[in-house]
Structures are given as structure tokens and as C-alpha cells.
Length: 376
Ligand code: CMC
Image (cartoon, rainbow, N blue to C red; front, side, top):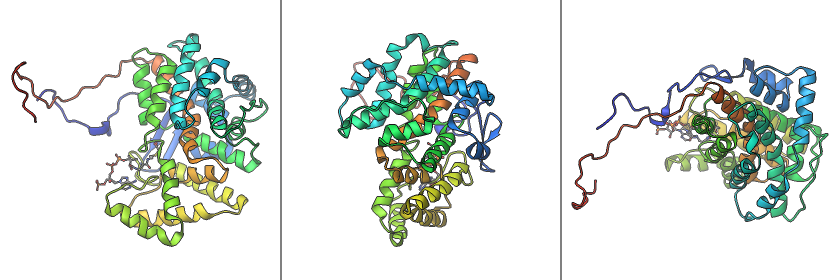
């Protein structure tokens, strides 16, 4: 056996680097972006302000915010070559696969912004501005619609909703999505941010790092969970069936998506805020079906497993009420987390150290080439 020391499976509790971007207090259930509590940001700021905060390390002045909004608005139009690439993708593709491929393709046409250098911030803003339009372009084509021209006067959240559902959101809908974008914008060294940093740490470019991150976010143990929550709710159907379905699932040792977290030992503060927004949007639509199912699901899962909800439990219910299809939920996560991923990449470029851990080798070492293989 080669390699000494303890193996930390899943790198649990390993401190891999220092960062000034985000702090999670898993015991108190607090989440901080660059010093500001997520609860204050969700109550008082906008996604554009939070993106600025993550990228530049401080909240923008009114003039800086106006400038960022204007810059993002000018970057919303999908370049023709990228549009053609998206239009060639099969309509049956998962939007996360489309997004991953589109980010990668964009890296070919925008090499000067790819970094690692000062220009990487330009790539960060271009990607943030374009992700809703990329998703909208694909989604409208697969549902038989024509591409929409993004309206520069819309907030980032309203532009995202319009790109996905083809209509302007109500004020409450736009604010619900704005809050969801704020809450998902960063989460310390989560799997996709880590993937982005690993890629950037080789001095690879920003677009490659984000491509790695999108692929990592797609998995159901990470960003893909909210889609699975809605599949579960559709399977449960009525509040009186929650207990039976959950017990059967747990008896099969299956996970209930939207619960549990590697870092939070109490309720994820993002779930607390999204629970409230799921109720508010449900009340506006006079449809509390999902909200009622989720409340009961929380009770049963907590009683049976002692688990608390995470950010993915209530987000899908909000998106569904706006008429957004389930397979666009994880892409919405990406449309927000792009701010955090790119902030991590920029930080990595400033304090670069190749990320390359070690494995403990547990295989054979002295097999003789040409002799019959011995199967372990
Ligand atoms: N349902 C049922 N059992 C669970 C769940 C769950 N959602 N989460 C954890 N457990 C159990 C798990 O089976 C294990 O039990 P035992 O010790 O008896 O085998 C114990 O709790 C510890 O689980 P773990 O997998 O060692 O814990 P982890 O820190 O690796 O898990 C997690 C974190 C998020 C992968 C896990 O809680 C999970 O699979 N949750 C469901 C998927 C989900 O909702 N993901 C979204 C996470 S938040 C958004 C994001 O960051 O992307």
C-alpha cells in the first residue's frame, strides 16, 4: 500500500484553500457572501448587486451598479455562430448538456477573454449575461418557438424568466426569481466551484473552468436534486400519501432529494427563505398544492431521518408555479452560480497553486507482464 495519512473520502472536512468569497456556518445555519448575511442580501439586494459583490469584493455604488447592469444588458444577444451550434443540438438533449456544450463553444470564439489574466472578468460577465439567452434559445426551439430578442431594460431575473417562459413575469414572480438567483450565487467550495478551481489551477482558461463546473453541477447529489424533488412530488400526488411514499423509499435505502447537506447540520438558511417565497408565489397563483406537499414531506423526513431541507427542496416549486419545465431547474441554478464559479476562478488566478491531491494506492505493484492476470 502506498501513501500515508488518513484518506478523507469525498475530501470531507479537508481545508483545501483560503478564500474571501463565501463562508458557511454549518452549525448556526448562516451563509455569508463577502461579509454580508444571505438573509440581508435576499431581503434588500438584487442578483446584479450580488454578482458585483462576488466579483469585486465590495457592494457596488449606484454608478457602479448602473454600469454593470448596462454592460450585462449589452451582452445578452447570442452570437450567430453560437446560435447555430445550439440549433444543431438534438431537441431531446438535456438543457444542462446544451449549456455545457454552449459554454465550451463560446470559449473558442472569445479566446481573448478566457484568461488567466485581467480580461477574465469580461468572460465572467459575458457568460452571466448569456446563459439565460442560451437556455431560452434551446428551449424555444425544442417547443416550436422562434428565438426571442432579449430586452435590455429588464432586470437579470425578469430577462431569465422571459427567456424561459416567453412572457414578462409579474413583479412578484420576478422578485421570487431574483431572490432564488441571490441564494444560489455561491456556496463556498461546493463540488462545482471546486471543479472550476481545479481546472483554473492548471492555468487553463475561464471557459474551460466553467465547462467543468456545469458538468459537475448536473449531478443529482448537487444541482440536479431540485428536478428530482418535483418528480417525487408528482409521484406522491396527495398530502395523505407522503408518509407511505417516503417510508417505502427509506426502506429501500433511497435518498429523499432536497434533504441533508455536507456542511449544514441545521436547516439550510436558503431553504428557509425559499419556503417563504414558495408560499408567496403559491398564494399569488392560488395554488398551494406543492407547498402543502413539501411541508408534509419536511415533517415526515425530519421525523424518520432527522434530516433538514436544503436549498433544492423549495426552489422547484417556485419555478413550476411560473410554468418553467423541470429540466430547466438545474440550468437556473447554473444561471445564478455562474457568478460564484467565476469569482472563484478569478480568485484562483490571483493566488494560484496547482490543485493536485494524492491517492492512497491499494492495487498490486509487482505483477509480471506476460504472466496470466490474477483477478482481485
Ligand atoms: N435522504 C435519505 N438519507 C440521507 C439523505 C437524504 N437526502 N442525506 C443523507 N442521508 C443519510 C445517508 O444515507 C447516510 O445514512 P447512513 O449513515 O445510514 O448511510 C447519512 O445520512 C449521511 O449521509 P452522507 O451521504 O454521508 O452525507 P453527505 O455529507 O455525503 O451528503 C448530500 C450530503 C447532499 C450528498 C446528501 O444529504 C444527499 O444525498 N442529499 C440528497 C441530494 C440533495 O438534496 N442534494 C442537494 C444538496 S444542496 C444543493 C447543492 O449544494 O448542490
